[in-house]
Length: 322
Image (cartoon, rainbow, N blue to C red; front, side):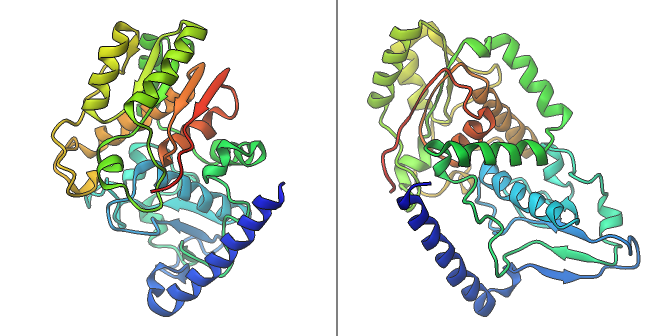
């Protein structure tokens, strides 16, 4: 590990401690706490995993990366993890269903009924000691093979995609011949128009075109494009024509006004279950490509970790932060 990375980790831990103290004084509801809901499972400790921030804004892959850390934390301590996206708000909240189960199986096979009648229960949240001391699932996965490999192992050890998601992935992978493709991932819409502070700068369409031409000339391979932005899709389709491949169900946002983040704009698919499953499937497919050209976002981190170093060639746009 380089001196620079050690220095960064030290200051990340210091920042975590300061943030914990702030939450302890001002927002204690975000801290981990122990509760009891009844007398069931008196021989077990159940760990209810909830989103840290329940503003309905955080993206699916950002949520997943964090929930995996909590699942690993619980299992390391002999607890039984249960992910609750029904009683705690996410983008996919409807007050009726546990949205985690739209995408994944429960890590311990527990049901909501028995969890909320159990005697020994922890509600996840910030603790005095960080649950992520090694900095897993951060942007370092793109430059540090050790961090990427540890992140990948944790991801694969602690989540199971559900049958609906796997069915979508298998069907689309066959249609796309995904293992032959140059995967291209780039965000537009709110990332570009709002330039959210602390998020990674996205490349311009011209930068993406140049890199695709380079890969196309080297590998003569089809291009699997993942973007939500209709303008980006149009520009790349005009440039590369039938070499561009997309999933059969893809749609694009063309009427985004740039006044708020996508999750608070009236431009997303109304069926939250399908919206999330389709997005997750595309990011899994991106991890199965032979080559990769990508910007840095929470989504691309997930795909990169899932692939775990198996791309034959790759290019990641490191353009700094907004």
